[in-house]
Length: 333
Image (cartoon, rainbow, N blue to C red):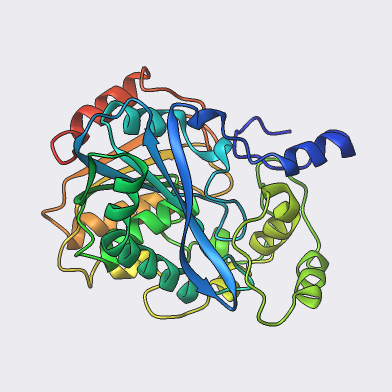
């Protein structure tokens, strides 16, 4: 069994599985006051974001850290803490930043273009509504929506990068992509074959067909515990069908958007050498393209030993994190 903190493969008894399903744990957020807020509604389904404010925050203007959760755009949720790296939460607390983490529509009920539509509406909500909500939560506290760090792991890294590329007016000063799905056309996602998925066995395509058969037309899904769809995810990637569900809507490929964007804010790309879920090739390709077409973008590329999600329990005391955060301070906050 893989040791990665991002491995959602269902182990243990039925009772322990039920406990995990019932608990979208919040222990990493104990130093924050939090509030769930709806930023849009689709087919009568409310899509929410959580606003987290450090409990020791002082009155005044504070930067914003937006976090997008991972899960192949297929599973996960805004407060699924196992995937939210400790060091990025500590960074928010250290900088006195307002931390905001949204849900969004998930594949295959949605497609990639619809996910990006949610992200666009989320950024509009940030500008129009977040300042008022923060003031209501913490009197005298003002969020600076023009001083933004956006970060995310896996699919969240993809959405962080897409936010910077597609929303130049969002006030984003820097981006952190942790083992992001930055090139979804690599053979791992686009070609059928035997693939190691964090130690999971090869899955039959019937896992995909069974799910699609039972999927209700017009259904909107915005959070699912990872192990519930882990076998579907494995089957989708192993069958080379990921792009089928992502779709070919405008702007869905981040690596293509690099050449279309007028500029790109400071970019910190992080990836594990032994990543079997999102191979490092995805980040390598993105970094190579970024260097070619966005010459003025400050870039830091951190490669560390480890599987997907290797930094889940890593703190700000790690040398590579210290060095990266020192670099980051030139651009945010």
